Amino acid sequence: MLTIIEKPAQVRDAVGEIRAGGTDVHDRYRLGVSSGPIVDIYKLSADFGDITQNADGTVTIGALVSIDAVAKSKLVQEQYAGLAESADSLGTPQIRSAASMGGALLQRTRCWFFRHPNYTCYKSGGDECHARDRHNPNGVVFDAGGCVYPHPSTLGMTLLAYEAEVEIYGKGRRPIADLFGDGSDPTRDHLLAQGDLLTHINLPTPTPNEQTAYFRSIARFEAEWPIVECLVRLVVEDGVITFARVGVGGVAAVPLRLENVEAALMGASATQETLERAAKVSAENANPLPHTAHKVDFLIGTVLETLERALEV
Image 1 (tube, rainbow, N blue to C red):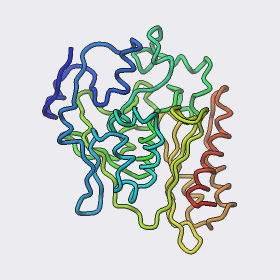
Image 2: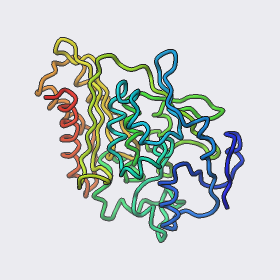
Image 3: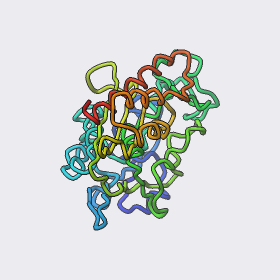
Image 4: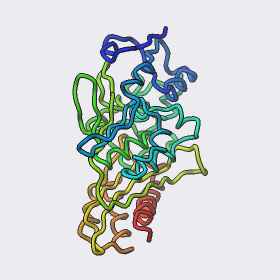
């Protein structure tokens, strides 16, 4: 059964999985791990399909804007270069053209046990994580004790580093960190309630003289989920780092902002020694699984590479 939504308020009473671009939900239906009615929200694009710069300098991105539109937006490229770069690195051109920004944030885990019809895990109504005691080389580096598969949202990680907010219809704004939580609830990929509709992403005013970089360590050239990924934002004044934001993905059940790395950078000289020291800090609280110990080195190396790219050293 298909329900087409024409007004945002109708989502609250609709029954079924929400479909925007469909790049995630169609995959799950094809695999047989999702079934039942679909709630299609494509007609809401007139309200939630634009990128707008507001009078106060902030920028609002509608949840139905495609990833490709964000990657190619001159406004985003000029004022939030790290967001444009990370968006342009996702998937394939076909996926970027179809997938929505809201869907990218709210996609379900890519764990092969969750996406196998013969397994029931925390996120599909069960009471265990099948990946924990099995082969899990793609698992987490920071283990919260529940689900051990990393959150799949590159844009969630990027927007976390940009300190963005999301807007929920009828409920106002909240920091994007509150959309994902701390990963302690293994049953959730995000913390939206049933019937909630994410309508907009709100970016703060651009940071002057910001230098950014995005880098992902992957097993092949493109169209692959990252082993580790990182987004860095830095401001350097007179050779000193005065502003730092560092986000990482592929290492925890939620996107992470590495405030300990930021603290190691702030007030320090913009030298190779500083970057290497800060990169090592990224793994301070790591507690990897037996099959993910190798990802600790990937984490340190990926953070260092991204820092170097941001400062062009």
